Image (cartoon, rainbow, N blue to C red; front, side, top):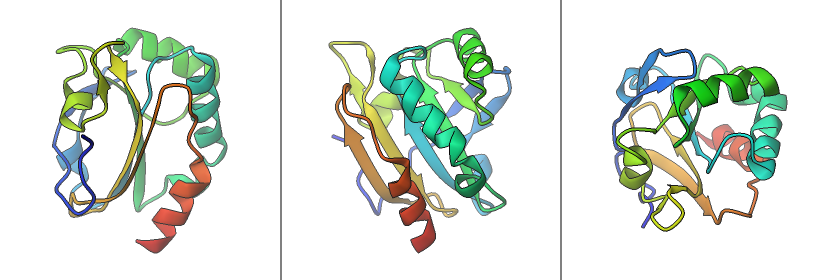
Length: 152
């Protein structure tokens, strides 16, 4: 079961596609976070979803909001994927222990070994304010993220 709205977001520490360490708690008191779990880099729906986020990045990511993508791919795969697709936001590698952060958020598919399409909007206090979890074939609408962020 996914982390519930109104609860504290589980903290984590993961590496970006550039090898930088990111902790969710580093944003506390400073920025809201749009945490976007996706199954795998280089797949059709994931590429489309992250490309849509990139197109809306000027409206989604700013001084008050940080977008973070997370999949079970390695940091090296994330780097090639981000470079190839022109993605200018951090892609975090939930590679090892495999899917640990996705499990903590309740969006890990044990049978397939990857994250479901879960998105969590976390306010600057570290509280989950909104979430959506879609199955593997079902793309999310990045316009929903904009509506939720406007209400924070």
